[in-house]
Amino acid sequence: MAPDDQLPSYSDAPPEGHAADPESSGISRRRAVSLLGAGLGGAALAGGGGFLGYRRSLRVSSSDQAAVRRRQIVVAGGSVGGLTVAARLLRAVPDAQVTVIEPRETHHYQPGYTLVGAGIYSRSDVLWDQGELMVPGMRWVRDSVLAFEPERNRVRLEGGDTVAYDVLVVALGVINHVDAVEGLREALETPRAAHIYDLSSGEKYWGLASAFEEGTAVFTYPPGYVKCGGAPQKITWLSEDLWRREGRRDRIEVHFHTSRPTLFPEVPRVDEAVTPLVEARGVHNHYGSVLRAVSASDRLAIFEERLGDGETREVRRRYDLLHAVPHARTPAPLREGPLTRDGIGGQLEIDRETLQHPRFPNVFGVGDCAATGAAKTAATIRKQAPVVVQNLVDFLADRPPTARYDGASGCPLLTRYGRCMMFEFDYEGRLVNEWLYQSTRETRLWWEFKVHGLKRLYRHVMVNGYV
Ligand SMILES: Cc1cc2nc3c(=O)[nH]c(=O)nc-3n(C[C@H](O)[C@H](O)[C@H](O)COP(=O)(O)OP(=O)(O)OC[C@H]3O[C@@H](n4cnc5c(N)ncnc54)[C@H](O)[C@@H]3O)c2cc1C
Image (cartoon, rainbow, N blue to C red):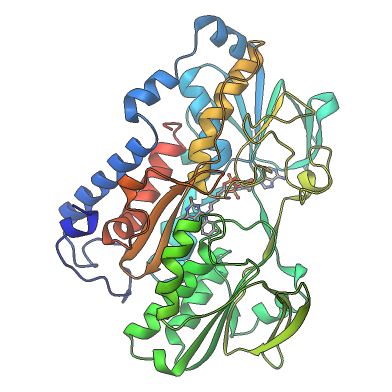
């Protein structure tokens, strides 16, 4: 039986107030918990072997433990990537010397930003105290890396200190580069434009979208690497669904301009499933279309659009509401330092399977900042963290790396309120565990799992090192 068929019916309407509370979305707390359990079970299975597999994969021989214990392990960046690696290592070797360098006192659960933009989550759903995420044994340095000095096995901090290491794990993530598009910064200051790639702007977007009555709504997908390649589409489709349900859709034109040749070029099966669904809803998709400039005063979004013959043309679209996803780039110490190289957009140079730096073997990388070519998602980190920990232990035990990352990632593609396509995929764009996810179907189960389950998986499983 498909997951969707097992569910009772309940309201899947967009929120009035705060639908993150299971009671307010019309299902009982018990039901929500059982859905959560089903989802967590599924995810654990999909993770490969569940809890027993996890226990086995944590085993580190006593001689390896001794080799780890003697060394200083430094993790640069204490968000989900850095914390998941650090916590998992400490589960395997509880008295390892692990230092996490992270300036923020408040952790941002970024996968929840889309739900903030859709009015499902509020600010308090996505902000957590950083200190509460640090597992016992982690030493937290509340500072920022100013410069990496891999020849000297140390990092320099903005506060003036230096931190020496035997092994470094780089987990700096990527940041918004709003100024890459001329005029975008000014446009984002007007009451016509916002985006979900920043919490405050995501809150603003929900205010704009929920009050939007008529006109042209323009959504963009930037060139280069993007955090969660599904998020620009998700917010487009959720907004479209909101306006349809509230009876305004016939007064609103929806345009989605993507720099890519199709909606999901990296996963052809999903692309084939989702494109007709969206087209039937009257969303105008524009492919190979890159936002180059915005003129806030006359509300013009200016695109460079690729034509079939390799030529380009300029397209000017007047907007009443603009959701413009900023370009992404890595933080300066990585982008401008010795750990990157030409041609990878300032990302960490890395072997995409071992997750080890090719020139500095005592440097590993995890998450968004690493040039693996894999999707930049927390789901990716769930698969990468065990590989990093294993290969880090191998390195300290004087062995070649034994673990391999296969490019696996996942995406909860919110296609409308109350519906989600959940899928995992590998480097080749093949669906993984399709039987479990029913990957190309829009289901209510995976919507519930995204809203109620994934946050808990992230908070209590991943960053606690149970991956
Ligand atoms: C709108 C949106 C929707 C998303 N949806 C999903 C989803 O549905 N599913 C999913 O799996 N993923 C999703 N993601 C992606 C997910 O949030 C990221 O992949 C994940 O946060 C990456 O983790 P990270 O640790 O690599 O980087 P980040 O979480 O970006 O963390 C980087 C850390 O490094 C720190 N740092 C930066 N510079 C320095 C410095 N110089 N020194 C020290 N520390 C520094 C930062 O303070 C930060 O804590 C979404 C992201 C966004 C923006």
